Image (cartoon, rainbow, N blue to C red):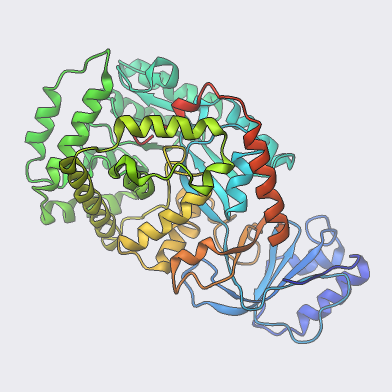
Length: 515
């Protein structure tokens, strides 16, 4: 990757306009960009012009990959198209990416971030993750402040969409300090209004809600103009949750019940199971066991009806296969010397291994049962996609061995294993994520006018989705992080992680319960 740069001035802008003009009609240019460049306005003309030259562009729209140039001006994509005719003018930064592949910046749509400025935020970006949907949200009040620092440019990090505090029913496994616990419709409505006042981007619903409190949340969310997403509460049918407007179903919760011929019987057994206030996790575990039982009475007809309902309602699936696979594996499957651990505070390994020692399947029977269930989760994800239900790419970072940044690439590979094509998987983590979040006019594709969030790969991800791990460079908000700078950042992250003392909220971030 060679890089030549010269001073950018009015002469450069004029020369660059001439270059654009003779590059041919195949070069698509952002609306208004030419007049802005000509005038030298702050939106375009006063920003450095960077040309990524010679890569194969996979733009995220699903269109055919094409070789050419991507032109950046400041933090925006100015133009995309075939290779230029004639030499680029002096003053333009030209980066030779011949033989490389350019894709949109990736989104992890289910994460739990610890607010450590020098560790988690840059770890996403160096792994090509330029956007995240934060699912614990205002449970960490410092996360909105972290987002402000990222947006101000004082911290290197991804774009952030942030959930409310988890809104859950009585006896929540997150307890009264880790969730907004509601027992009545009035409390449920108040929790939604509090989320709106806090500035949350959406309301996060959870597993212990009852039908009455869930319905109140859905109604109040509509009144205040907030979407809601999260777990399908175990006392609420998935179809009912979709009809109420739940935007995404996390971890496939509720879907095995709803596609079973014995849904009513299984739900009744759950209703009749008392919740021990001293050990609410036992009830939660019972619900998960009943899900595994539901797989044995799967009804293709019920599944087709449900999936059509989800598609018509615009409900998306966020399978988080990374954490589902981790929860299916025995303790021996986890490497305490995993090289990715070096980029996290040392106490995280201890927290994760302690958690896994208590929650991982440990007998041959339970290991086999969990293996079969994970295969069913993969099949269900593929079936949702084939039925036209939108599928998102999320990991549930910071659960055990779900690494910020790194694990999104695991998720993409698992989605291919579930039956999605590499192109569809790339879209799930780029254009589809943007569409789900309502950001499709800002991010998600390599098209003129969009934010300059890009990943440059050394190999073709359509030939093998695992090639998304072969990152050559990242462009975040228009700033090019080349191979040398990436290595410097990795070293900085590792050093910063080693300096972090034990963090009091660490155990909240991953409970083995799929957050």
